[in-house]
Length: 111
Length: 111
Image 1 (tube, each protein chain N blue to C red):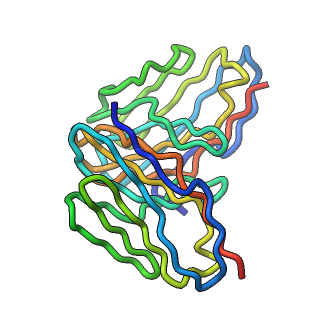
Image 2 (cartoon, rainbow over the protein chains, first blue to last red; image 1 turned 180 degrees about the horizontal axis):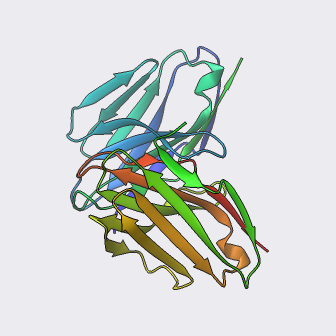
């Protein structure tokens, strides 16, 4: 059975304090690892897709990396508006199979 | 605003009621999904439609009945729900092998 584990469950940082979120996965065949951001009462907002070990993607203060066993979401000099729940998800099946999500990391950036 | 539109945003229904959730996208995506999300939990896959045909049903109780009238619309018919079915119901769409685009969900309360 596919498993996606995110850590930590919650993280509180000061504004400007960089850190990393972890997503470890155990799957039969990875067809993509996805990072989403979710604000309270909203649907998940797509951030990045990673397909192969060694791949990296960047967007503003966020950088996602992928190894054969885990992915990291690095947040550099975060701002209060980066506060959200960050979800990691994997696709292991065909092109129209759904994603399996981890439980997420609840990130709070204090001014 | 997202490109996947869900209505209504909020719904309160009794256990004997029949109601429907609606989802619409005009991005030409041929895969559409229903997810259920309880508070402080990750989204859980319920159904997948691929080219208007039901391709995945994750052992969802029959009181939830999906329908895909055309390539842009997805409905979820609800009947005889239980209070534990109260949750955020998310619709998503995607091209093959691509990230899912989520709507902002319908907040359902069953009384």
